[in-house]
Image (cartoon, rainbow, N blue to C red; front, side, top):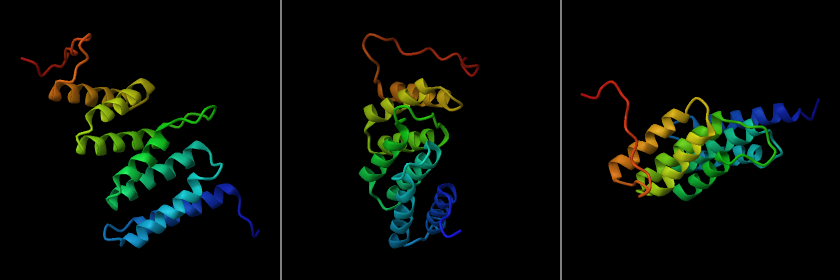
Length: 159
């Protein structure tokens, strides 16, 4: 068959991008070619698992190139769940954590905390980690809402 199924086409484009991006010493042209390959998956009518995987990888590639605004934009797209689409949590949550980490590195703490809050409210296996990171940022930077007291940790390492 000369025209592969959309599933096979997406898998091939994803693998091409992964291969181009896999080298830590990849030159910027290879990284840009990887982004272009992944964009073909992200811009199609792909199911959320393909779309979000491509967007999360696009964000990582832009970060490698030092293009933080583009990295954040791609990560944000993956984090948002399209209306009516079935939920996809693995890649969108990964992209959310990556975006929050980049924002923390830029001292954009309010934006990072908003992402952690969104991840914590979403539920799932990493929601507790998101809540812990959110609480850590608030405690370390004295960023509490005046109406809410800080949480009291109920950990066993307290004296």
